[in-house]
Length: 106
Length: 124
Image (cartoon, rainbow over all chains, first blue to last red; front, side, top):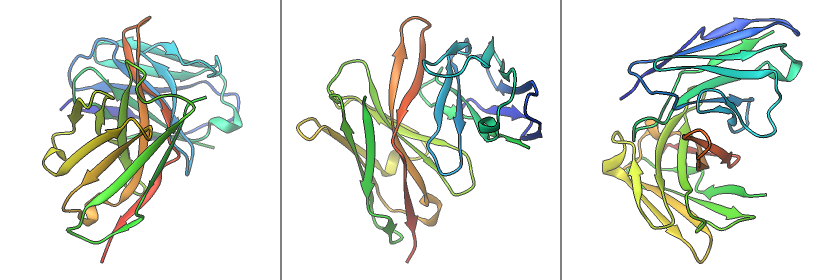
């Protein structure tokens, strides 16, 4: 299995901050890396696919980068609705796996 | 706008079978190129991909669950289903169905549409 390690597991930030979350994979996955946002009690919502492509309808303050084993999700200016949990996911192999999540707190 | 809706028993006894159905509306499950997935999330924990089925009935399962898992698709009802045998407390989770989409522009693959999720508790 490909293991995904997100860092940090949680972070404290304020509205307007620039926030970066990292996802490291246990083996190279090219750019088969996605990012999801999950609000409490809700299903995950796709933000970024293929490491850096913004899903339709997602605000442009979200961006993704990376390839191989190291990836980042950046929120350029944190908004109140962004205080929630983020997951990375790899779809490189036939066993799709997720990171453990990063909680962005006020 | 395509929508997914999970349904099934919210309480399952240990050793019995956990059965869920995902109804697809606003589009056809037989549209080519999409996989139909199940993902679960134990309370307070992270996400685990369970497996997928195509409208052709081709499947791919998480090896950790493969021996207990069956998936099926009913094209006439536009829905797909999951059966997980010999349920234990470790199977207690919110279960989501989701559509898997291949993005030709970037060779990416992701879950772009999700159901709202349904909580299944395994307990006597």
